[in-house]
Length: 369
Image (tube, rainbow, N blue to C red; front, side):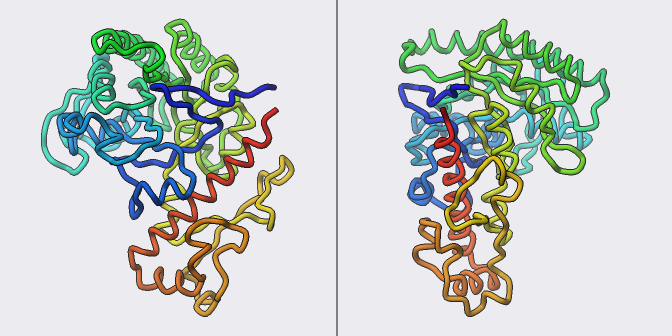
């Protein structure tokens, strides 16, 4: 099978496969743009819900978009924010409500009390104000324990909202006089839970509307926390190979490789940055930093820099890693930073983990036929 090698958004080429760390509020904690570029990060995903409430579209628009506001020259994807909003609506009474028109919520991302109306049109208009390279439609993500009837309603809403998002997208392109060669991309999200017939119904309807790419929506993990490879692979099979497939939220190293083999091209996840802040760093299991289809389950492991045994260790995290942290700091010094909880530990750990992920992506790119 021949895989996509790249896509183009706003005149910029995006190599595939690729991994975008979650810069939810417009930043990766403890790092700056130079740190990210030095780790070979090519793009970031930011969250429309969070940025809508703080600092707000008017502030970002003043800077002509997120690229200038955040000093990030690479690709920016903005998630619709629907996953986060609906998770809060389902789990917190009084946070908000959902209807066929969209989502109403009463608190900003920092807890401030204010009423927000978040419709499919508002979602797309906001992402245009952000200057995003890839926009994602508002979708209705059901709870993990949703009933069959709730999943069906979720798919109905996802399809209807996708139609409204596409209409708004086309209107914005026309009003802004954006030529085809410079336009952003619009991706839709395939819902349906673990019910394959609902997944197919959703995908078929979205394909009829027509989008630049398609995302796996919902919860990709089983109760065991392992990837639900069956539903992830099935969902990928519902869209053509000629269009990119985005595994939203899929980012455990093993799950990422499994999902790539299942057909996905774009990945994002909070894990590498969150794990770095909690003293969990990633290392390859062999000195060549290689992955084969036989070693997918065990090509990596955690390194815990805060462990007492590293207190006097003069070696880097990994002698085979070329990241800034490994080239300049010892395990002993990292141990000290993590023990005293200095913010420098989080920066150096994050740099290392992100470089690990870009090395994984480099391996996958070398697999392509």
